[in-house]
Image (cartoon, rainbow, N blue to C red; front, side, top):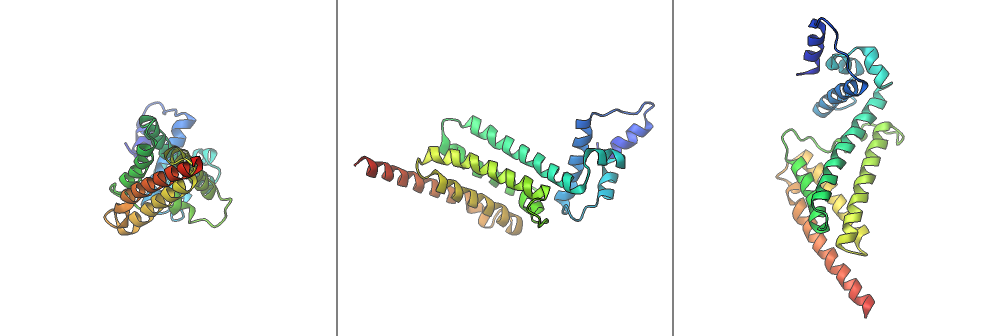
Length: 217
């Protein structure tokens, strides 16, 4: 049921529905995600967003004091969701860091090929704001940092001593897949991201092994 339908149902009810703060926040953020994903955060005004939530204006502004704060919260929630999925992958493939690292790339591939994909939301939204201190830029940067930390931990397990470089290369591939997929579709260069990541992983493993042999000689 849509937010508007929920609002109508509430109005027809003999006793108004009392939602928790978390439920109201979820309604606002769900609405923001739908509107921002379909267009852009800058093109969506707060009045429109409030209407789409079916909540009162004062209710929305008690939850989020400004649109800037709302945009930041939207990206922060998106980051928590994506990182949560990635952490599930890491738990499932614990003990096989190579498979886990490539599975993260495959996760991106799945995102790029889904219906309605319009590019990386962190890049899309944060690029709309010039101020590095803007909540959207901060949330996007925090996400990228957390993602890279996970990649680096895996990469160092895969190729000891080469993890920093390997993580940077894999991260760059993932960003490229998002950019290319959003502009040229999933059958363009983005389709080669997983294969390229696999080659780089194998190369790093070989170089790491050679480094260890050289040290032991």
